[in-house]
Image (cartoon, rainbow, N blue to C red; front, side, top):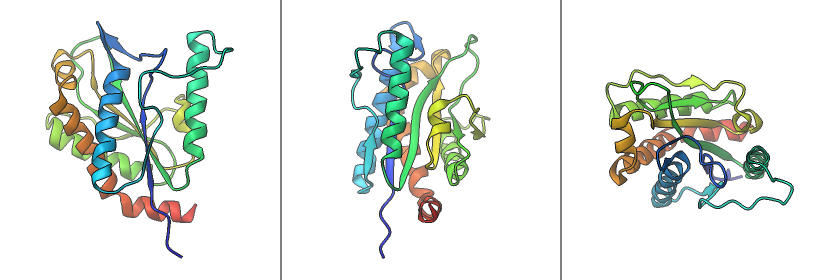
Length: 205
């Protein structure tokens, strides 16, 4: 029997009432979405099935979600339900970092404990360093247990902090089409390079 193809779930972090980290009028949610849409377009060139957890900045909330916290909880649970409903899924969640200091820089990949996640994160990190910033010394690491989305899904999953909004140079780069495209290329190439492992993992599921 022919195995069903992998489905890449692209999760642009935050959105709606939750703009995520920001510096001035630059919000994480919009940068995440821009990179996610570019990743989706690239995957289309390779005929990879994709699902986005959001395609715009607006999110529809139920009436009872009347606080920011309640809206965040609703949206996170909505995303988990969506991801879990997709057979043979692989999750890439896109985010941006921020630090009180302006010195830290560099993209970093984090992986869940689900099989295949570590390999995908390490391949992603290798490309992010090679293509975006050879001076980046960060390494792929297991995500801490407090990230609800990552601990709640059962598929191979990584979360990528694409850069630091608190670093002026990186903030400027992250707002450019060229840098966003390069970031999306890194994510797409890492996924394609890890497909054999991910297919084997999902085949055992």
